[in-house]
Length: 136
Image (cartoon, rainbow, N blue to C red):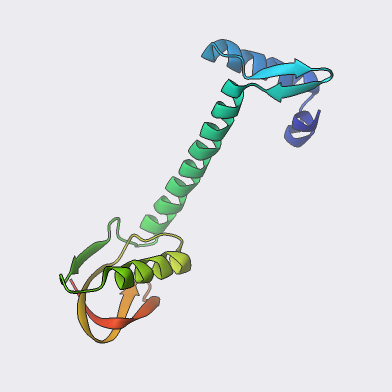
């Protein structure tokens, strides 16, 4: 009943849709326990996989919006061999927290006394202490 309410459908239309999906896939996703339907182990797997696919679809939409806003499709870095990996990863993580992901900047990180500064196409920056950068 909760699924029907959440989808603004009747219980019978949800049951029919589930049966159609199970038939098309050749699997049993639900089992009836009393008056309730419960996911089978196959259903639990399909549920987890479906959620992952929906998250990926959302990420794809987000990436498309970023690209249409002028972001680059790829992050390009040239890192000096002596540059501390932990610092680079920390900077990329911070950039991802600010911008939702870590694509779209092309900078060279060099060891130095200044900060790492990663910029998006709008000029917004995220900096990390320990290095200087120059545009590629």
